[in-house]
Image (cartoon, rainbow, N blue to C red; front, side, top):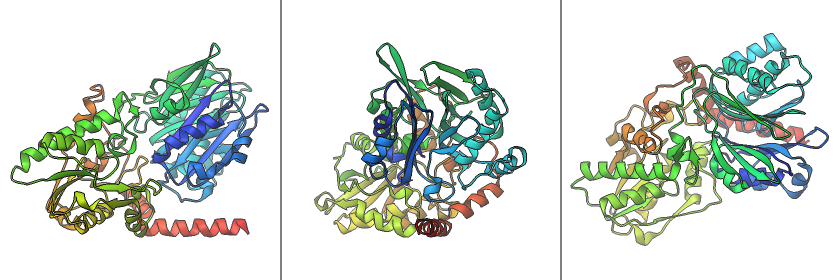
Length: 503
């Protein structure tokens, strides 16, 4: 769930990339990075842990010279939170390459072995993004030409598609050539293309969400298609080609439920409109199944569920109220690396408006329930504010399986819905009644905006992984990497390493 940006322009791009990353900050709060190409064909790089506003000071922006560049905000799903794993990544051969990546590769160990055996390339981090860059570099190196044309770049992308598996939306730059953006054959992670006309010439931009184009003053052109590569030379010529066999659009349903901003449009779908439809379907289900439940007020758990809750309130003909005030300077608890941090951060992130809860039967609405940690804390806050009864509605179905495509959902044993029914989950989070959206209603909510999407990656609900390569052994491996104790150890190791490097 990282955010990526790439711009080829006639003017300096540092400020535009910075601005785009700030509106993609919701996609990753762990680290940020920008690399540009200056007039002397040198990469100018700045990356560090932290938010965009913390990582880039004026002195760094002044160094990021050049009319082409890429940027990244990091949300770690593999590896650790060390700054060494922040993106963009860079290799000096061939030509000089740098890359940003959103997603997660599912055959990382095989790729690492192949790189060592065939290419004698060393990968210095545990990041699958560095692996991906080196695979792409290896295939470019096989072309053995001083100057690449578009067909050469596309051939390297084709070979890369054949080697790597999983979810990936990428933007890369090749020194003295141009920028290439490409997307996995299933289109699991989003990627859009924009343009801007100035002085009779065209600037181009790639980004994870269309909102980044709006912020930088670019016009939305289209989504990059699954398996497609789009190549823009540094002098502004654009080429595109389908580089994968049998591409099929199966985007991640969670982009629409939770990740993307409501003012974005992804794969022909208005995220805002999709969430309104989710509220419509869920409201109708509540009205049908909870006929004798008395609800006084509908309150969203901000902010993703606001539009969903408003629609539910209209369907039920009940008052809609903002009962929680959100501190915008605390990161998403979903992204927090440990249980203790998630619990403490909920109290720092939200506070109740007691008058909206006191002596009322309250329907709380959230986009989803993952671990249940946040939900339980919020329910306790609502009771402390004086609610008589608390009902809870989730705009997503029960999450029972881990995600392997770039979303750091926990291991199955850490998921509150794993092995439990609705009544058991309700008891654990402390609500009087609980209801989940049906999966068919959720997918229909998105398809109402774009009927051409026939299938989604719904693996967290169904356990069906669209790439077809996920085994129980693989799930056990990522469970060992992702559980809270493993994250805590990696965070400690990264801190010790960075302290050592500073000495």
